[in-house]
Image (cartoon, rainbow, N blue to C red; front, side, top):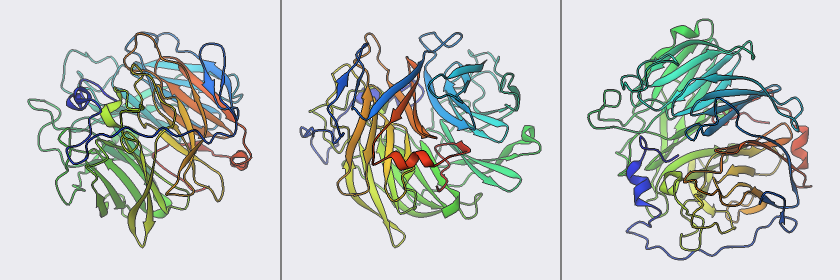
Length: 451
């Protein structure tokens, strides 16, 4: 996400090709969706295998221009939706009729959210006056993690916080017996900052004791970079995806992609560092396939504020790169970018997505801001293809809009739309229908589990 506090120079730079690779017009391919796209009322476009089954608009107190929706997490019959104004809890026992259970006002960037047992954790990547939700926002002395008890979904309770250097842009949970380890990803440093001093070539690991979450604290600050990063925009990591069952994590760290051994969760070890200055500007996120034999890294070219899904931006930029894990090393195989050209006023780039649990196949759903929601198959790593999509037309008068996160959970796709609210989609396709037999108890995209 492109904000004043994160990658301002990247956003201002726009979708420029690197010096090593002059920009060439991309070839926009036809979608492999099984039916012709159809347009519905309100400018919605979709493939015929996707149904828009519910829409829950933002409601007060999260209706202001700065109250944009962010990330999603799930547990049982509930969806947890982050927002710059706080977070909302939805009852999704009937996915076609999501109902708000509660909303907590707790302003901050970005309020990316995770859920574990009765604990909800928010990432705060904006200096403010203190850890509490009502802290003065005109002061700039604190940023990090906020922790809530959501055992009563109708009345969440703030239980504590942990200050971290350069805040927390996103975070990753690694459960370990009686503790929850949280990997904090954050950009930095920021000159003359009280909360983000130089240098910043590290991640931070917070231990949250499940029996006393109020005593959470930083227990490690491992430097996971064997060499200095190559991004001129920021240091640190953007997202880290852990796969605890495989003792692996994949870190998207602005200038690099990093494969980690997390068999000791407090002491992650670098297995491999990837750099691709020709095609990637901002290593944004990572997703393992179910077998742990592939990693998809996404590039957020322009920081989310630019129109990069057009014929003037190469198809390898602002896209996904698919890597196969061969003999313990990642090898690049192919790229995927949505094949539908967007308008010059539509910010569009690869953003948050997750696997669709189809046994024997590698299929993802992914948000592309105003490019909408894309479903794509990377079973053939070298030849990934889109098999379905959903998107709205251009949002008038908005610089940042569209789908922030799109995740599959228990038979449905949930999209957190920045300005429009929560969308629920149903995918009906013989290729993906086996996923409907898979039931998850909870889902946090940056902590993968096998199915």
